[in-house]
Amino acid sequence: MSAAVVSFGCGLAGCTDIQRRTICLVAVYITCDISVNLCSEAASQGYQKASAVLITSLVSAIIGAVWAWRQDGTRGLHRCIAPENVFYPSNLFASVLFACSSISLLKAFEKQSAAFIKLVGQLKLPLAAILARYFLGKKYSLALKLNIWTISCACGAIVVLRTNLDFWGIFNKLKYILFMVVSNVGANLAAEKTLKRDGALPFHVIMTNMRIGEILCTMVFLFGYNFLLGLQKESIFSWNIFSGWDITTVWVVGTHVLDTWITALMVKRLSSVHKYVVKCFTMVVLFGITWYRGKKHWTLAEALVAVMIVLLTWQFAALAHEENEKQKSSWRSDP
Image (cartoon, rainbow, N blue to C red; front, side, top):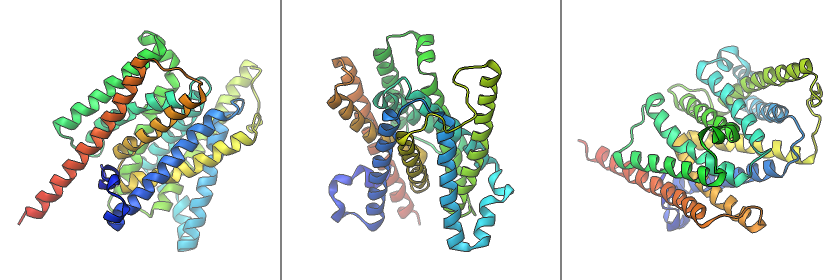
């Protein structure tokens, strides 16, 4: 974990400029993540989820294109829309999975609270750590591996306690959340590989490439889904993709646009695994809001497991920070 996240308690005055910028980035990311969850939970659920993802991607692509035009003129715009960039394997893979992840997340809010979705979403951390070893070549110590698997068990425990269902019952109830977890991890690892590869294009160009791919994927899903509903003559079928929209949907789109860019910065500056560790703060705040509103009543066992997840996530950050410091020390000592 970044030294800024682990040692933020030392105060900004005792940190370097890089650490201060990282702390500010983490703070903005936490704020955006909380806003996304609260707005998505509060929104009326009658709108087509894919339409919100489509507009989010479109707005993000426009932002990236304007940025590229101001930086490099027509050359920058060409790189944003060039097929070889948009359909670059890791870019396209990330685009498809980001679209799937966003749609699944919005669908999950139809039946689950933001706090519960965020808690189950902590499974992203161990999954990202495991897959990062194979896709990004990252290695973790035995202590970190044990910590990751303990977090996994704790997440499983809270799911069982909150749902009181067997394995297949849990899968049926949480299918959107679980699919969101898998697709989001895959998308972020693919994006990290693209953003950090040698000779990578500028950040805003890669972001625009991914958003264009996401637009194409979402359009296929949106119109394909509506076509199937039309064949089945479902009452909810409508070719008007904006049916069911209101001001709360606009807030959902706005917060998702901000979160898209801040999340990408987090992945570029830190990593996908570190991003999921930082999400622990979001979970704590959402628990507090849920308790304050009195919407959910938590048993002592559930509260203790939730606290365990928070502490284990902090432990992951501390262990990762210690490993980074040891690596830096070994590099300095090498002749």
